[in-house]
Image 1 (cartoon, one colour):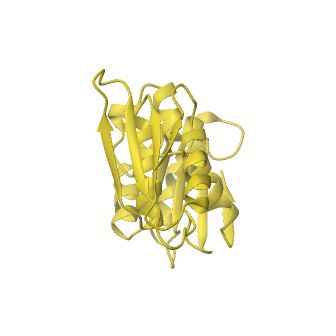
Image 2 (image 1 turned 120 degrees about the horizontal axis):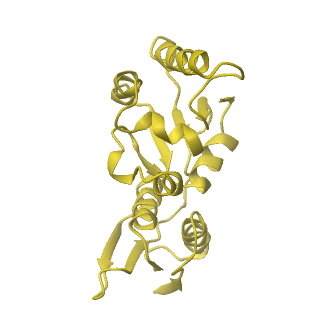
Length: 193
């Protein structure tokens, strides 16, 4: 078993360290990452799930630090699906100019994504775009429909923390910048809003 102390390290460093360690690990070898926040734990579990690997999490006695353990498999797959359309949304408006118009345009844009075939593989939200996947968003119905169709919806966990939205996330799951970059870099088509 290999253990890495990532206490105090910001997103996405624990996930990057885990993925590198898993690439070098022999099949069946355990990689344990020590972290000090629940978003890091969720991201490490998501990494394991995305790679088809088993994982476990143990809260330490202080209930503030965690040990996330992932067992290496025969082959470490990519975090992102190969190809397809990825839509990255980093703000709450579409285009520049009048803010109300921009909000309406973005709502219409997200609705239009429910009508295109094939549907995007990923919708990624970060910075101001994080509000769109949370309580109070006018786009939750359309985003839920996309999620029901198999679209992976991820919102930057660090952004959710920064804006105090962690408990208000209503669709999709928290993700990290490494997973966002991986999905964007492997997309056949990318729309960056």
